[in-house]
Amino acid sequence: MTPATHLHWFPITIFLVAYGLIAIESNVGLYLDRTAAAFCGAVAMVLAGSITAGQAVAAIDWGTLAFLLGMMILVAHFQVSGFFHWVAAAVTRVARTRFELLALVVFTAGILSAFFVNDTICLIFAPLVLAVTAELDLPIAPYAIALALAANIGSAMSVTGNPQNALVGVAAHFTFLDFLAHLAPVSLVGLGLELGVLAVMFRRQVFGPLPKRPAPLPVKLQRSLLWKCGAAALLVLVLWVKGYSFPLVAVSVAAVILVLGRVRSGEIHQRVDWELLLFFASLFVVIRGLSASGAIDRVVGLFEPWLAGRPMSQLFGISGAMLVLGNLVSNVPAVLLFRPLVSRFPHPHFVWLTLACTATLAGNLTPFGSVASLIVVQQTQARGPGVGFGEFVRVGVVVTLVTTAAAMGILAAEYALGLHP
View 1 (cartoon, helix red, strand yellow):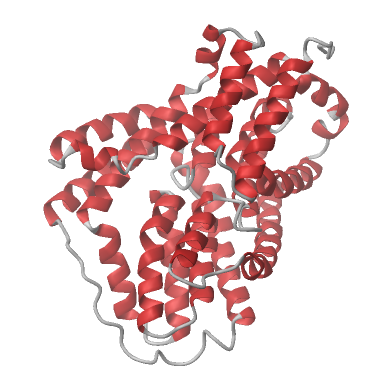
View 2: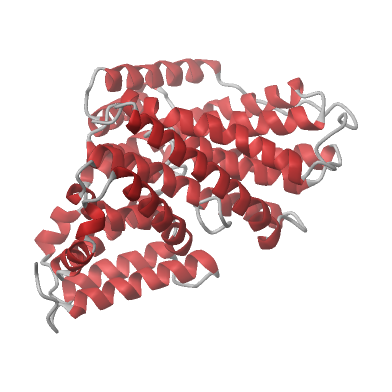
């Protein structure tokens, strides 16, 4: 074990300050946002001599960044094609009652988030949900909260569902089907539980016929581009199922669709979340500096008995840690903080899956637990009296506890059946 000498407290202090700023920005707002805080922390690690510039570059998981970038480019082409607006229009056309509309919002957002990233689904669907509820004179809260919670729950089932899953999928070398097979039951059960909780807590607002038929949503569908996007997405899935590298497939297909999609590159670049990529890169460096301090070895030494314990104790411990950390600093930094520890566990496959799904589900506790929830809440408030913190938490706490308990039960059952190596 590396002793924590006086000099080693420099990187520990930098880490604590950086994560403290991330927590403050995530929860109350700060002029120095979480990306800037992480970037400054990464630079400070190098300037303080905690790690060299070469070590900082080596610390960045370029495979994860390439995977995220490739998927962002593909999803951006789907956005331009009008696919998501077409789906939203179909949802409003099918719904006949308030509860049907709620159920369609939950399962449509949840399933789409599994394959197109939860943040993207919330960015696109939040304005559409607000427009429909305003036109029909329906309360905003049940449907907006349903969208945010469902996007997070649904995203848990796939490596393409959210950034933390991408990190886990690349780091743990999961196959696409392996990840999906283990966590799809968690998400599908979770979406059903969410719908049940919403039906009970908003029972006076979500039952009964719609006041009128909503006007058709305007949709400009570029069919040629959509066909190309569909073919590209199918190619991605086939290559992943065949066992090819997540990052290599993602960037290769992204390059192909950039050429064949015939969309102006600038329009695609505007839809790529460059801030998230910088945030990830910076956090990799910050965590590398923390590791160099000896702090991670010290923590491992203190909790060695727990780390080597039975899988069920690890399941409870990780779930509790993610519930706290995910809402303190958001789920991506929480997963990155745990990442160096996973190899120390005796059942890393089981631990990776537990980490991925519980970190995602914990993001539903408050609006600050995930970017997807923040997007929805901010868009409702931008249009007048929207969803408040207390209103979200009242539902979020119940949904988080219920879905996390269900996830733990499903993962425990899978382990008992010998489905985890």
